Image 1: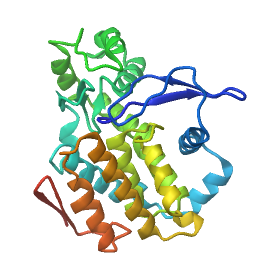
Image 2: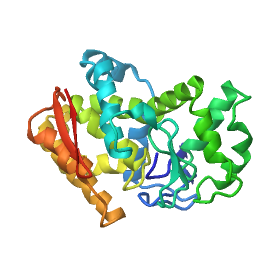
Image 3: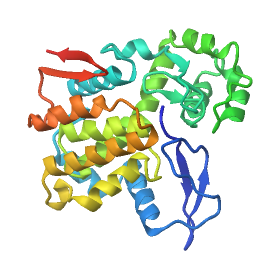
Length: 300
């Protein structure tokens, strides 16, 4: 998750306390121990719903078309994300990617931009080490825990980047990245999009927003963006127009990107997702053509 930290919440009777693991530029943050507002609770509930299984939700999803979860569409989704995150359609080439892009969140690495400063990279390495204790990243776990929530490289330099690139050649670590992407980003985004009545394009819109903004419940985290969109338009599951709802969601997302950095390139929204929407391609049918950062990409 390149762009925003994750908030982890523990629910207790009457008062819900928020524990902030990392506050990124796209996240408001809250003081530990403060009660949450009704709006914050709604976002937390939406997050929990997307990450848990309820019988009524399972029935809705079972009745929905595969959408972005269909193998060919999921592959397309990874290529679309990679065009914006890594300027390539070869998303598998990003397993070994790692650099500090100067966004205040430490090292960004892997297929969806896991960050040393936003807890998700630490979680990935912890889960991977539990299954594969002798891996080449395990010795950096103490340092990763220390720098979590900061942009610090302390204890990671000079060897961590080389260790990451080396481990990325191991099939088990590639699989671990895939699983963490699906668990934290792809699965919850597609699940919630289906519950909102969105088709394949809408599911991708949610997924890309989840990757970029992070699965946080702050105003500029994914769940905050969704809540703001729902305040302006009904989702299809509420009887609203899918095109109108997605147009508003993309407007809100674009503003959030610009708020974070006024000069940021928003072409992943403007000349990719919005172009598909205005073409009426709600099912993400191929062939597709889009532009990101001035480069044209095509999928036959």
